[in-house]
Length: 137
Length: 332
View 1: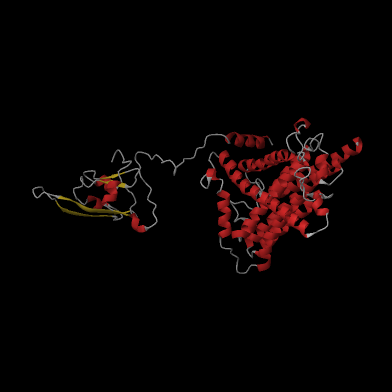
View 2: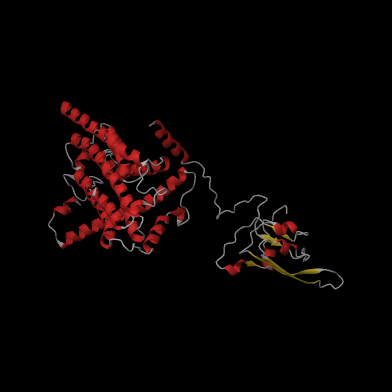
């Protein structure tokens, strides 16, 4: 009987207390510094070494390069760069292998869309995804 | 309002009676809508979360959205179910819940029918709901529904005995079964003081009657497949839900009338506040107690349930009757 009233008192005391839940969709949720979110890609840094494509465990990255417009310089520059987020597992391997940090992780994670086609993100989209870029890659 | 029933039945009077019933139904529906809202809010707050807050301002339209979803849902029926009984069961569960409100005195003048056996009328009609529960369990043609239905019936019948026995003390004290006279007899002191034991028994038995925590075994959302209404969906399921909350309304009214002095103020000096306000305040306190208990208590075990009713509550209720009868025969 005493425990019963104690329980009632406890719940009543909890009633006006501060809520512990997050207001996530209204306020952005701060992610930890090592969080693996959607990649940001900067085309000017890319040297078209194809390392990210080779390391990708789900084969979700496709890229093509073209010769450098300045004929005196060697090497290639990036032409197209697509990540298929239907199968990307955000494993962080592409950003780890990248020698120039052209592809880095961000803290963004909202990928829900109404159509599967929208999950194919191209170079311009990945370049534009430059908010909340992870500090250390 | 009361005179309306005694007058000869003309078309005009019939219209008035129907309108009054519809008005009461609307009041009850609004109560049910916001009782569910506040239940979720209060339990949310006690569990340190905000509760529903997405639909409408402060989430006020959450229940409206939920009910609309239920009404728009496909009305499914098991292939081998008893067609007539399956449709009849929700009606059988809901109709008595609304009918018992006819005798409830909300204030001195606001009462639909002034029966001299108001208590008996309430007790008699409210037990018909058990029939609706059993019918639902049987007609679903599902073994879990049947077992769930029988379990609920066993619980509701057992606790009904203790519930009725706890009212008997008040009937002895007042010398009347008329609910209005029971309230009038509490002018000096509310029944909760001389009948405190009966009050405790009534509150506990009422929890079991309402199938609410800690006696919510018939539903037991976390361990059973919802018991007797497992095969119900759409508006038939909504009907069962509605019956449950209308019973909460009826039980709250009953507690207020029997033990908390109905529309009477807490002290005669405060009688400038209208009776309906007093009634609503006491009624809301009881409804809050329901939510508070649900946030606090774990569910009781099935075997504890039955022995608690027959070996605990019922003897206490008899003791209360004995004490009250002895007291009345010596001092009155």
